[in-house]
Image (cartoon, rainbow, N blue to C red; front, top):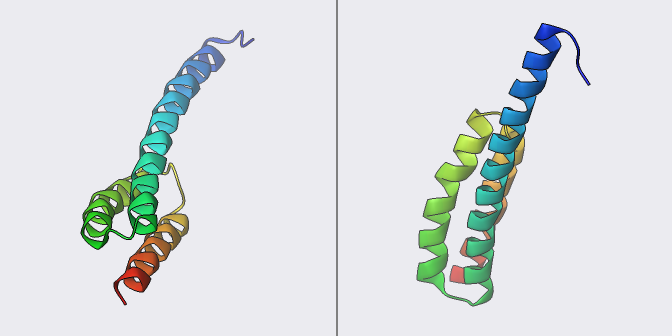
Length: 88
């Protein structure tokens, strides 16, 4: 366990950041699963609307540093490709 005052503070900050990042990642994964389930059920309108909800969540997670910006771009790209494949 940390004994210095600064180490105790860093530990406290780390725990707060960890819980914040975990909740953001969980919410992110839920939005992505909504898109994938809509694509698998072949419901185009639901898939498009759930993608419109998922993209801002993915972008915000990337801007906060929870996920890398290229990871975010890759996720958005793959979800969009799934929906475009469903449309055609």
